Length: 131
Image 1 (cartoon, rainbow, N blue to C red):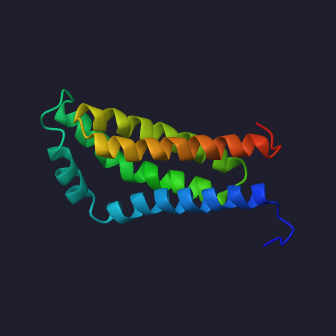
Image 2 (image 1 turned 45 degrees about the vertical axis):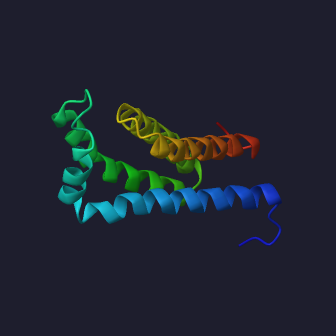
C-alpha cells in the first residue's frame, strides 16, 4: 500500500473494499443454497402483483449478479465503475420489489446502498479518472 495516499484516495479504497466484499458475499453465500434462497424469498412476493415466474427468475439470477458486482468492484480500475453502476441498478430492482411488499424497513436499508453506490461513483469522477 502506498503510504502517500491522500485522505480521498483512502476513502475511495474503504468504500471499494466495503461495497465489494458486501456484494461479493451476498452472492457467494447464496450460491450453494440457491434453491432454498429462492423458495424462502419468493414466499414474500406471493401477495404482490409480480408473477411467480418473474420473481423466481429474478431471484435465481440475483446471487450471480451480486457476486459479479462484488468482483468488479474489488478488481478496481475501470471495472469498479461498472460494478458500482450495476450494483446501483441491482439495488434499484430490489427496491422495486421491496416497496411492492411494503417492507419499508428493508427499503430504508436499500436506500443506504443506493447512496453508497452514488458516493462511490462520484468519488471516481472526483479522483480525476476518465469517465
